[in-house]
Length: 101
Image (cartoon, rainbow, N blue to C red; front, side):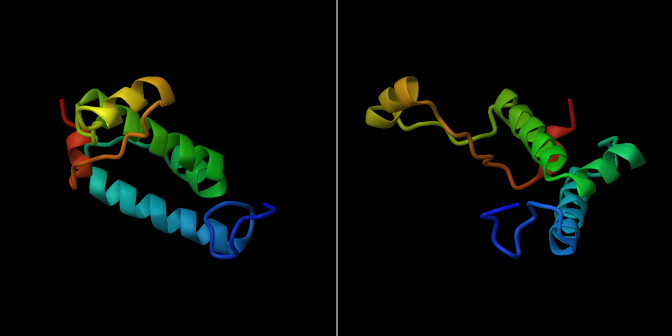
């Protein structure tokens, strides 16, 4: 992938592949055994940065649903978020909360 740093998880290099495998392992450890992912889905996330990105986006959507992301501060941040949009960042340190309930 043009423009991706040589140590990025993006692209088709062996380094990118290894980084995706490492990132996915960390996510799955944090999510715990209640999170179901098939061997084919796991491999797809390792083989494709797009698939891994999709998984991360789905997990973030779940965090938003559970009100476990940073919210804009009242005032200017809130006003700007309504017009410019808001990038949600998870607040919780425990990924397994995304699986429960």
